[in-house]
Amino acid sequence: MTDRETLDLYEATGALLHGHFRLTSGLHSDVYLQSALVLQHPVHAAALGEALAAPFRVDRIGSVLAPATGDILVSPEVARALGARALFTEREDGVMRLRRGFTLPAGERCLVVEDVMTTGGSIREVITCAEALGGTVVGVGTLIDRSGGTAHFPVKRAALATVKATTWKPEECPLCRAGSTAIKPGSRV
Image 1 (tube, rainbow, N blue to C red):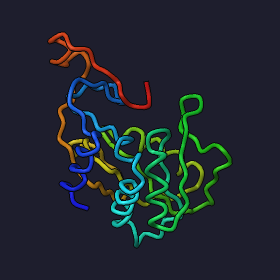
Image 2: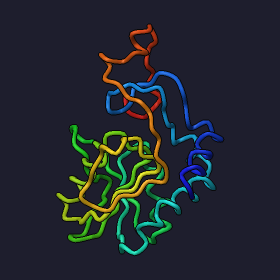
Image 3: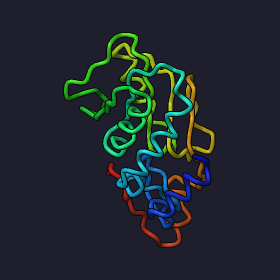
């Protein structure tokens, strides 16, 4: 799946939004990617998962981990394509943890996935969680990379598409200065 095909799919399902948004990172932007709108269609979720899994086929992945809540739909599709388990982390007392009886055997090769990466913060939290449990993170995959190339990881990294969207700190946001109010359409308030 090409960059253009991925973005066309987001646009066709209404998952690529334009307006004034507050991102999970706290930054403001005029572009928002609501992946749940594309992933609600199983055929699209399967195609995106298969495409995101492709660069990691040779990496012998045992578990695909994603941060809850928005990325719970990404990990099973990528895991299915890789023949791996699909796990998700949740925040507990402000820290990402595996819960619900999920475990990682020592040395298990893990892939961390996310739908949209802006700063890479959630991915870093999941990596920290996996490594603390003895997992070996060998890759990071995202459906959309909107980091502008600023999010770096010491492992293999792949994204299906790159979106260049301007972000601002709230106090520097020209949309706020113009009187617009940022909305938060995502899963974390």
